[in-house]
Each structure stands twice: as C-alpha cells, then as structure tokens.
Amino acid sequence: MASTAAVPFWRSAGMTYISYSNICANLVRNCLKEPYKSEAINREKVHFSISKWTDGKPEKPTIRSDSPEE
Amino acid sequence: MFRQVASRILTRPTTTYSAAAAIRRPFSTEVADTTSGDEAFVEAWKKVVPNIDPPKTPSQFMHPRPPTPSTLPTKLTVNFVLPYASELSQKEVDMVIVPATTGQMGILPGHVPTIAELKPGLLSVHEGNDIKKYFISSGFAFIHPNSYADILAVEAVPLDRVDPAQVQKGLNEFTQKLSSATTDSEKAEAQIGVDVHSALNFALTG
Image 1 (cartoon, rainbow over the protein chains, first blue to last red):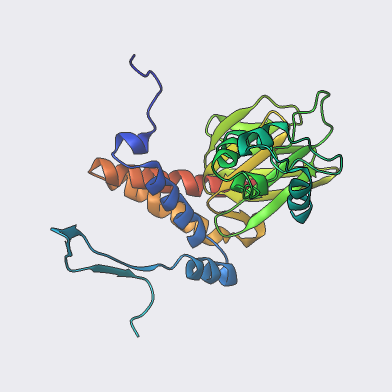
Image 2 (cartoon, one colour):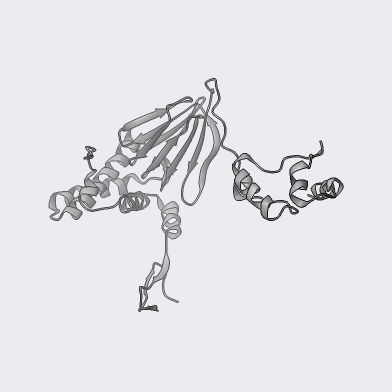
C-alpha cells in the first residue's frame, strides 16, 4: 500500500525529524535577548564521550564537549 | 498490612492450604488493595506465595487517567511542557491556539481527539480575557477525548524575550544562503532557517 502523504522538504533531503527539531530550537535560541540567550545556551551544553566496541573491547572514544577543558 | 496478616491468622482453618485460600472470607473492614490491571499478577503471586501481600506494582502508583466526562466540559485542561521545564501543568483554560503544520488550530473543550505536529509559530493560551503568547520552535500537541491537551515543545519563549534585530539579521542571512545553496541538505537547512525566522518575524509584527 503506497503512502500518498507528502513528505516534508527536510525529510526528502535526508534529515530526520529530530535534527529538524533541534535546528529549529537552536535558531530560536539564537534570536533571544541577552540574559535569556546565554541562559538557554548554557542549558543546552552537552559533554559526553562515545566509543564503539568491537570484539568486546572499546575503541578510542570521541569526546563531544561544549564546556572548556579543565 | 498487619490487618491482612491478622485476619489471615484468625481465619486460617485446620484444613489444607489450597482449601484455605479458596474458602477464606474477607472481613468487612478489609479494603481491596489491588487495582484492576494487576489481577493477573496478583493471581500468580497468590499461587506462589499465598501468605505475603503482593507488592504494589508501578501502575498502582500512577494516577488513573481522568475519565471522559459524559457532558461537554466547560474548560480545557492544558499541560504545556518543555524538555527542561513544565510551563503549564493541568491549567484550566478556555481555548488554546496551536501552530500546527496544517495551520493555526484552535482547541476548545470537547475537541476531537487529535495528534498534531507543530511548526515554528505562535501558541496562545486564552483564559477569560488574558491571552498568553509563546513562540514555539516545534513540537506536538495531543488532544485527548477527556478535554485534556498535552502540548510538548522543544523551545517556547514569550515574545518579549525575542530580539527583533537578530530575527531580521537571521532572515536576511538565511534567504541569502537559500539562494546560494547547492546540495539538498544545504537547501533544506537554509529553508528551515527562512521558515523559522519568517515565523518569528510574523509573530513579532502580527
């Protein structure tokens, strides 16, 4: 049964809904006035490390961080 | 709980275990301590451990879903949540207008149950003569049959926190990026930028 729903432009360009939603949220945050803008940006900072595991062993982790390294 | 144990001791007959479970009559002061959804668990528990009260399951700690009233309710109950805060929690209002992808949708009490995807736009909550407006970046609105509306947004800002100069600057920048974009994904990002900034502009001036 072929779906006849029109696909949104971002999905036909290969973007997922989550990416779309996050991009929209970031754009809105960038348009805020000063104290609110820095609060919003601070709130959304992330810091995490990801490593792929192969053969039961972790490979070198990639660290994604928005905070300055201490 | 001790009431239960005491009653069991008092009613424990001299016959076998399975007969005891079958013919035990509850005292009038006993209160049923399980909700309907957990009957299967309670039955299975009683077969294995008849002497101990079954533990409470997570669903017993949850508030039951508010029932769908038979007459049309006068107010809509709105839960408006963001990932980091709960803006409105069970607030009774007259009407909410949400920016659905299919256009501005007004939600009144007794609205047909709907799931709506929201686009960047203005959300307004109408309560008597007050109207509170928020600009939403994107999200979803769930309208339930019992006149509860759950609105989930990723970012929601009151309009007075938006900087019009930044909005104009962003709009120009993205319009320019859109015309100079080559790959599909660049075009998509530029288009998203144009959409969000023009929605912000419209919300500020409208």
